[in-house]
Image 1 (cartoon, rainbow, N blue to C red):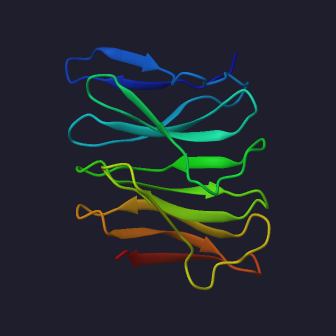
Image 2: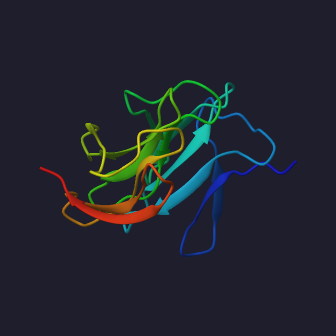
Length: 160
């Protein structure tokens, strides 16, 4: 049915597929596991019944933690997108707000979400900041931003 499901493959070859509670299997969408760290923690995103995206973290024990940036939009395609995670379970990503503008975020291992915009990022629809990866310290984020003219630029940012 062309629906994606996240999965985890152990070193011995056992495959476990999973979807967070509330994930809706829209055709050509679904649960996306985007990263796994050395401890076996998976991060990713999924849409709910409204098509709004939510970030998740799946622990090695199988517990699922769902999270959302506070300013993420509630409409179809909007929401919170998790992009990767590091050894301390810091998760960078981006969210699409009610005006369809991208903003970066980092979710700390304790669950605090820090939202940010890179200087020079556009503020129109489908412009803005997308955090993609984070270093081991959980402070330096890299990604890209789309400026007001639609040009894509890379960035590296150290958070306080």
